[in-house]
Length: 361
Ligand code: 6MZ
Image 1 (spheres, helix red, strand yellow):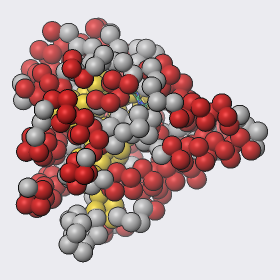
Image 2 (image 1 turned 60 degrees about the horizontal axis):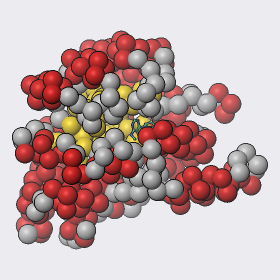
Image 3 (image 1 turned 135 degrees about the vertical axis):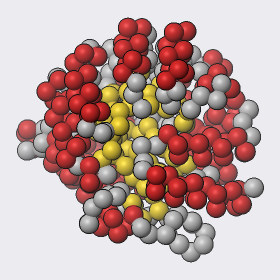
Image 4 (image 1 turned 90 degrees about the vertical axis):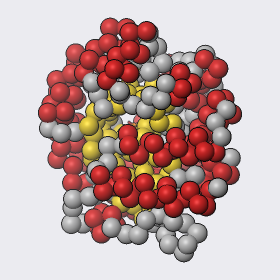
């Protein structure tokens, strides 16, 4: 495990509100319990539960959103989540979150995202490079020396943001999210994700917003095949997104299409097994894709909800699929090529891995 922690890593599939520390959730629940908004003892049990079906996961997210959807908390959890990833040597993080409206406290999708940006700026134990084309603190930090803990330099993490469309949303709400992403490009927003409860909603509802995103140069990644839905899987693959997440319920034709278009897959091992989207690691599609040299990247999905970390996902992959240190290092390094980052950042990341090669031997 220690080796997996010291390995530099790239995280491409992490939901902000799924990555919150249990301790923070419990603290927030306690405060709301004292105010009489919720019954703390009921909520405590739900937060600390270990095994959850996919349906229970989405019930938990509704609860988490009650606890977190105000500006101060959104800022706090963003800061903590980035610090947690950086502390386990994640050197590049694409963090995704659903911009939310909460009329009762005057929250708009934009003000939600502004709170996220404040959280990014508030991170202090590590340097956060998040805004490539801007004159604010982000660009100054962007040019700081590369991450090399142990040589006296401060750690650095690149952070890019993906704005999620929740499958419960209307076409208009999805479009609002894409427009917001376009307006926040200079602040490190680089793409759009489609997520949310996979048994809810229709592909055609989101398609106009996703097409608009693509026409305007945003990257798109889709939660695809988390439940059996052959028609939707085919439609999603025909869209040719830049990446897909999960790919659990793919059939022969879907694999063919995925491979034909060479679409990288964000693999979330613990999440898939806990939610029973895959019955066990022995039958997980990681093995086939890895052996076929198809582009894949190990990710956490929801480190808080599934009590995991990216280092743990590497450890799990190593023991389940017999990967040695060399294979794990290569897997982590290959992920650079599937990021939505620009060439300069990719080169910086390659340098970080090259420097690490000597230390990790
Ligand atoms: C689909 C998921 C997910 O956006 O509030 N989310 N969507 N499948 C999953 N696998 C288990 N895990 C998380 O983060 C939480 C939201 O991300 C999506 C859901 O829409 C969830 O409400 P944010 O920061």
